[in-house]
Length: 198
Image (cartoon, rainbow, N blue to C red; front, side, top):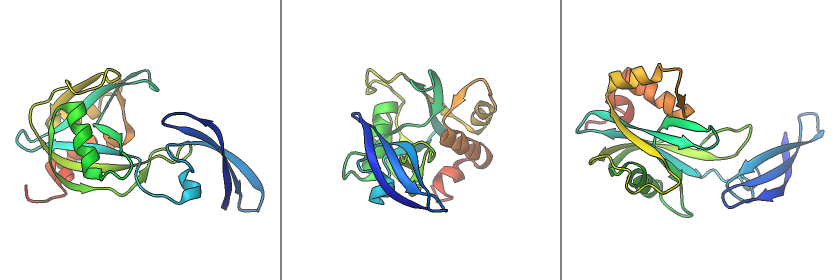
């Protein structure tokens, strides 16, 4: 398997649609359509920097996970998940996490316990890579800093509340968020903190 090239089909403000030519394992030229936040796409550039951060916020004083419910246009519904946002060019992951946390929840980033490497969201459709940022936060939730295009509700949830939420089949979850919530319900704060002494 080898990537040959990528041709721009359509370029928008935050996404570009590409036609990627590649050789399959028998040497036959094939084509794949994909979207990317970058140009060229990662399959050409080899870039592995995350495009966005998803913050898994733990409110230590309350011993609760911070979960948001946000209207997501592609789903046409409200989705339960975590604060998230795009990294600005050259911006440190911790800076993005602090900014997005403040905008979407009104909470302040105290410290980052750990973060994932760049992980891919939907490799069949996009080369978008995110980093999961596990963080301690403080303050009182507020959505006054959210943009007009963001409809967000913030919840502070204990382990049992998170467990009940993850078992509700009628609501929509972000995939990574459901996995993180499930782990928090099973392991508590150790999941977010990585077992670091709080």
